[in-house]
Length: 288
Image 1: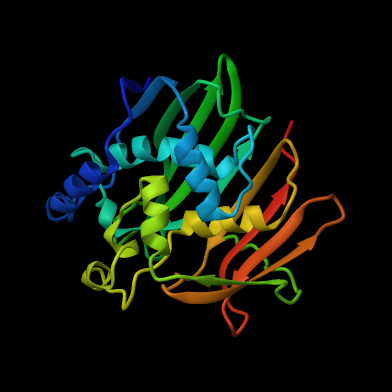
Image 2: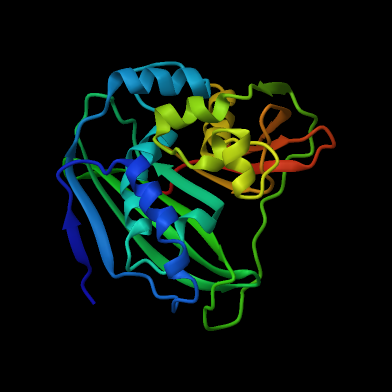
């Protein structure tokens, strides 16, 4: 079945999207799990250089003409959030858990390039705790695919037909942390400003407690970006996958461990003081 493609003239305002998502949370409970057969498309998007500079400051990247892969995820996020906040979307955005993120940088992307961005939801699957699905993004520069990514989300309590598969878990490298990161109490607000993701669980103690957290937690995609920036020089093209294991409370302190593989790739992890992972990832060459 062909997808219904909705062409956007401008990126959605994520703060308004989140308000809509929170107010629609109750009406979506008990709804039959079926993903909308719809894609969002933006044909020409210009990157914001000033915002990129702040993004690099917050995540640890060096500001260059070539942008980080995680920055390109940030460009698609407002479209993904708007699609998940639609009335037709079966799950409440407020209750979703980000499980994994995979992205491929097919070639270096410059900040001055205009981007064509497409997002969609697919791959609804049963899970022991509910159901999972993928939010998929693609970015083209001209006719060339330059970035692709997929975020897997868990909708706890969802009813999805079928038997859950066996989860595949990434292995953290068996090396001691080489870095210690101190995360200030306002880091969630800093990242929300540069990423557009102003989910209340990341902002203030009071707003986090409403959703069951004793303190704000940092965005998983900040942790992902900070891990990549901490690896140093990255290949011109690569694939990276991370699994989010445990939230990081703010303020906090975590360790970063990384080990280079024989193929030139990396295994890495962000861990607590006991060595238990908050995030586990692996980076390797982009598939040709």
